[in-house]
Length: 168
Image (cartoon, rainbow, N blue to C red; front, side, top):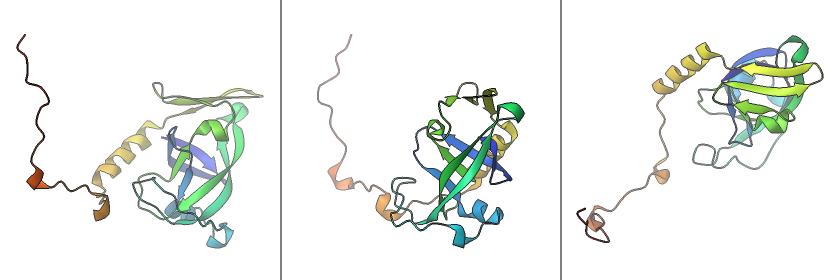
């Protein structure tokens, strides 16, 4: 969970997700940043397997992202997928190594480091915002569509062990 300057706005509640290839911007955050729907590039394919089912995208936009402090900061352009969905995060920043060359995420220390001409840039976790996001996610009610739920047939009963237990 980090804070970054995106399109000249200080954006909090950014999740750095090393397992995701997508850079996702919530439609709510997009509208708070006073960006218009006319600035979005249309994209036809849905985002699949993000939360268990396909999501329709509002569009895609390229925004500048500033990471780090003062002399060691870096500015990169990132293509964000804009999605209308209830979310704990404003942005999900997937695979920072793709956006910031040779970036390394240190999960144990809650830091992301990257080289640049001014030295080593560092982005640290915002602990207060992380706690707020966790509390918000606990309050949200998430409901999966019925087709995603696995229903077990009670008539089949339970499985049986392959072998008997051996006393040792």
